[in-house]
Image (cartoon, rainbow, N blue to C red; front, side, top):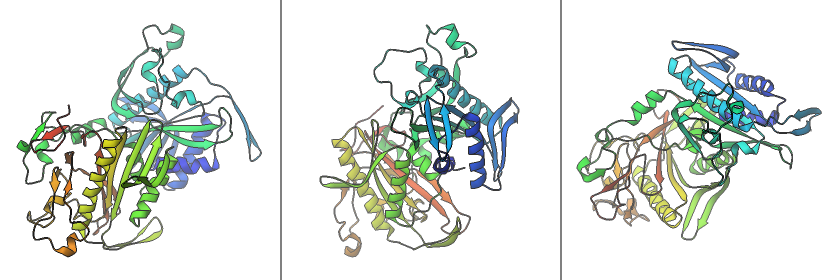
Length: 466
C-alpha cells in the first residue's frame, strides 16, 4: 500500500482536522478512493495467536492486511478553510505523547509478529514543532528515550529517566521494547498560516516482519560474491556476514510509489519531486566545480548527492490506465561504464564534503544488468554490475574492446572504496518479459557500503573500518 501518496493526496483536500477521529475517518476514506476494492474497517479487533488488540484502521488489499495506528497532537490554532472553522486546542504533555506514539509502534510489531496482519503503519500528524525539531544540546530529560525528533534512530528498550515523577508515568510505567530499528524522518503535510502552529508535519513508520528481515540480512558473505575474486581477497570485519545496512527512507518511500520512469530525466524529476514532498530543499544539476550532481537535497543536517541512471528494455503494456512504451536502449557495456563513473564522481564529492552522503542509483527492467554474465571474458568484464559483484580498484576495458564502444570512455576508472553490489526489487508488473524492474543503489560514504565494512588486500583502497 502506497500510504505516502494517499496522505499526500489527502493533504490537498484536508489540510487540517478537528480531532483524531476526524483524521481517522478522512484517511480511511482516502484509502478507499485509492483502492476501491479494499475492505476498510475502523477500530477493528486484530485476532492472532498472541494478540487481541484493536487497530485504528484495518485495510485488506489484494489479500494483504494492513493495520494503521494514528496519532494527532496539536497546539493552539484557529483557522477558517472554505467556510469551515477549525479551533485546535493545545494538547501539551509532549513527553506522554511521545511515549504513546512508540507504544503504538510496539503494538503494531506485536500484531505483525502474531500473524494478525501482514504489515503495520504508524502515522503521527502534528503542528507542534517540539515533536519533530531537534532539541539541540540540552540536559538529559525524563523522556529522553522517547524523543521523536528528525533524524533520530529508535530501537531496543526505552525507559523513563530515573527521576521521572509518578504523575508523568501514571498508566505508562512499563518500558517499551521495540524489535525493529526505526530511523525517524518527518514529511511536510500542510502550511496554513505564517504563525506558530500553522505548519503540519507527519511521521510515518512502516512495521514489518522483523524476523524475516533479519534472516534475509544474515546470509553468509560467500553467498553474495559472484566474481573472479574470492573471499580470501577481502578482510571482513564482521566475521564474513552481511549486516543489515542503515535504511534509506528516501528510496524506500520513493519505490513504494510504483512509478515507471520513462527516461533518465523523468526519473531524476520524479525523485526530485518526491524529495521535495518529503521536506528536502532540492536542486537538480547542481554544479560543484568540475562535477555536476543530478540531485542535491538538503534537510536539516542531512545532505544527499544522488546520481541517477534509467535504462530500459523493450516493453509495451498498460499500467495504471496508461499505455507504457519503453524502448530497447541496449549498449549495456557503455551504461555500466557510466554507472561506475558516477560512483567515482560521488567519491570525489564526498571526499571533499565528509558531511554529504552520495548515492548512485540505477533503475532498469533489463535483466542483463543484474544477472551474472554467462561468460567471464567480455570486453567490459571490469564494469559488470550484476548482483553480488565485488566492485573495487581500477576498472578498464580489455584490449579487444572496439573503438566505437570506448569512444569518449577510454579512460580507466579508479575507485577508492570497495562495494558489494546488491540489487533490490523496484516494481513488478507481471510475469512477462521485461515486466520486472530492479534498482541498484551504491552508497558512497566513508568507504562503508551495504552494511559491510572491509578493506581489500589490493593497494589504493580504504582502510579497514569496524
